[in-house]
Length: 85
Image 1 (spheres, rainbow, N blue to C red):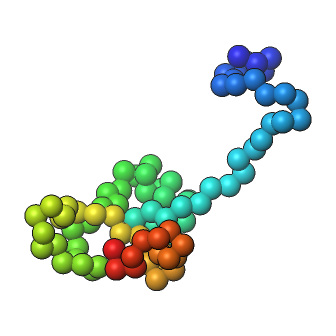
Image 2 (image 1 turned 90 degrees about the vertical axis):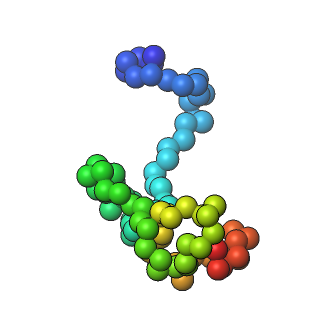
Image 3 (image 1 turned 120 degrees about the horizontal axis):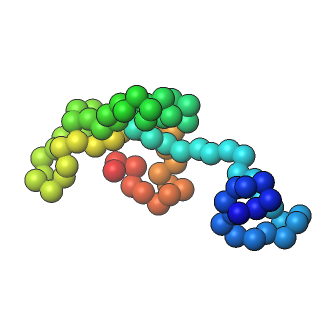
């Protein structure tokens, strides 16, 4: 514990402290982090069994999945993922 009574995971030299001041991500049926927070607090099921992206024909493919909004904005090439996945 530090002098403020808070738990400290590691000792950091003065001047070497860091701050995480933002976060980003893509989550199923969620447009931003605030909406994700609201959905999680409300225990919203973000998975679905709809076929809006592909048909579920193979027995090894789960019937339910999470699908991100605005898929056309996903940079598949950057992440080396075939766009049709």
